[in-house]
Length: 156
Image 1: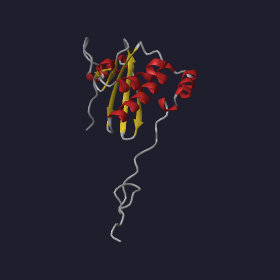
Image 2: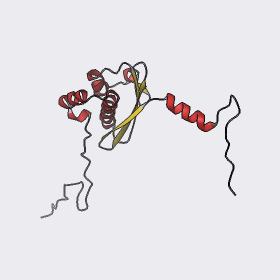
Image 3: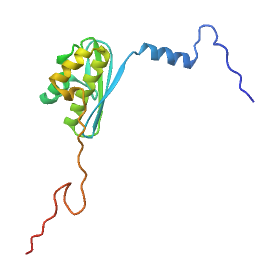
Image 4: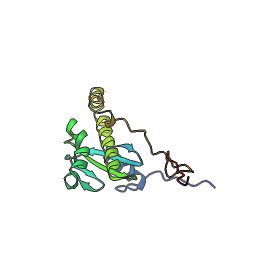
């Protein structure tokens, strides 16, 4: 049997699907990702007051000055005072996550601006701001303690 479709909602009430579509239209935000070694970062960019968060912490609350400097590098080159940026990083180590977040932030800001001149300027400054580092850790092989090193004989 065929199910009957509802033709409309009662006056003053919206369906759940209509509410979901309305919410999606309100949330105009952009998501970009960055990778470094085993770390993957996802940056969400939405109109706001210039708040930057990394894994739930405000940029000013990050203890390491090196990590703070690496994260704020794309923000110094591009004016991001009218965007709220929320970065979530998973996997890898702390510096790998920070460098992946740096790439994700720069990519999101360039995508929001849509300017080729800005993209060219960032690549001239540091290519790793927009281009991910493709290098990965080489796997360990048999007959050795690591990827390339081999066990030695010392009994002769």
